[in-house]
Image (cartoon, rainbow, N blue to C red):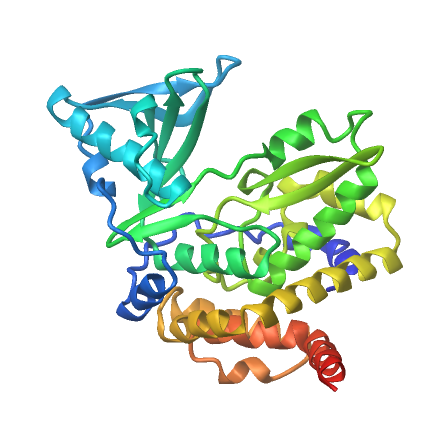
Length: 368
């Protein structure tokens, strides 16, 4: 990945924008079998369609009094008891594998609805009645491309993701962290921020997104976790939006470095890291992805076999991405791809080829 050279061409890529409205793709029979075999498909007491029957809503403000993209919704009292009980049980399914022994002290503090973006999620706030501590999770429509994105994140990234499906309903845990746009505006230049470590992590995040073709990683679609370390802090950039997994036709939409919203992070990397350091961090990330791939090789094969058969992007976008990746990677390997799943598999082989050879060689040496 030519991080520096590519970003110097950013002005001619200003027109690269993700699709305004991505369609929802249904969960195929093959993907459903995969979800069941890996513990992702469970019976949920409340469905996405149940939550659509709210009676009224009011705009929601943040703690500073500014309107957000969310609305607080309310339900008829006859429906609320059923929904409340089911939503608490879903939280228990997410957190304790369905152990309901502790749910008597939990309650639903609020249900929020967002009409911004593609997935139109409901956000559920669960509160502990003893100490007022709260947590969130999300209920969405089960979109196949998003599910593939969640699974690839779980398998190939350093982050584990908890989610479940039940027919047309998708339940996701809340991923805590500071939204990238807020971090850039409020914390990027704070005295305690280790900018070099943050720049390193953004380079690695950029690499992770490109290898598995996760698109639309603008600053408000990822969060930053801060971990105190010896004498300083470590940073982790995490995706929180997977709607644009392998959907777009433009190669640059899979590279966070090209989005104008991410300019503060890219500028940081270009100012503080030299070319050799950037290449080192990219190589480190590809090596880590390769080890995860080798460890979960049967699961990833099962996933990509289903992805190969599924339609998760228009044919025109598949053809466009094949052409652009062929040109960028200086190969014709993508010509044989028939679906977006084929493109993802081929792209992983192309970007990780040298790393896969090293891993296989080192494993062979250990066996001898």
